[in-house]
Image (cartoon, rainbow, N blue to C red):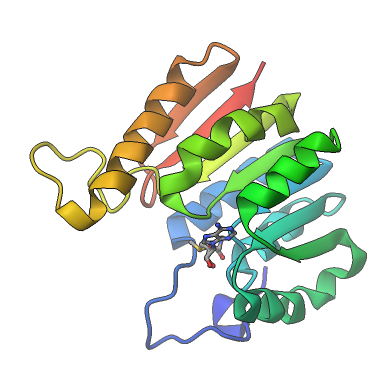
Length: 194
Ligand SMILES: C[S@@+](CC[C@H](N)C(=O)[O-])C[C@H]1O[C@@H](n2cnc3c(N)ncnc32)[C@H](O)[C@@H]1O
């Protein structure tokens, strides 16, 4: 697995919204065990987690979606080594998943790491895109611990936190999924579709 310091666009002196180290290990092991055929990732950034997904499962292909052109260009550069196994889409994730849904596309592993406030809205569409027996993994479901916090949430984070609470509620109560939330990194949910 390539070091993140070697990725174009990585700056060790700035905050970079990349998967935390313990989450990387967790994701790598999960994908290695599962060996999916077709992976979807929402939120590419510069392609680091995409490279983790592709390195852990050598026969997988990956569609990854990123809204910012600058990031998606860097991701294309950083992921060149994987050749035709990966396609980077520079698009709003909601448009992308709605289109794929209409095309009846299916994935057997989905990694959700895009806009946190949208997870709950994406859920019904992602459920449709996921094959039976497939896995949906969502990162940052605790949103810096605030989702588990009691008391008043600062106004600027309130809607994201409420939406993530709703996401956790919906996915854990959905009997088509078997969900576990792990206290790893910033909280990771893993949901197996029956
Ligand atoms: C947490 S970062 C992804 C980090 C990456 N998965 C990793 O660990 O290497 C989230 C990314 O989602 C992108 N994003 C935000 N809103 C989006 C949207 N509506 N559609 C697609 N991508 C979006 C952001 O630009 C950002 O690059």
